[in-house]
Image (cartoon, rainbow, N blue to C red; front, side):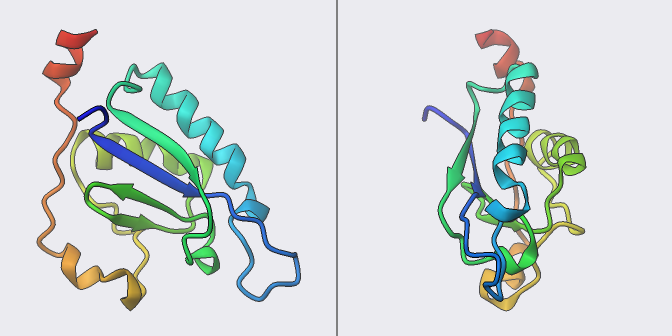
Length: 128
């Protein structure tokens, strides 16, 4: 497997008058760029891929993103959340409850027993 984690950040842009708003209109591209930069700075680019996504149908929750393979959905993500997502979710394997989208259509009940595989630091160092 080339990447252990994939982060898809919604960068969809809707007209300003759309009732759901849009992640792209809230600075999603800038957030994606900063996320990618930080992943590279930490030497995690071999393990984590950060991509733009079209509409994830969660724009009403602010900038939204989904992390695979665990399919964890975060909403209202801001620049100051990048470090928390990297450290807690990617490196420690913990779901960040405060960012989790709690809407039923994102199946939060399935996440109660979710085990997230953290990135293996020893493997990272061995491959560098």
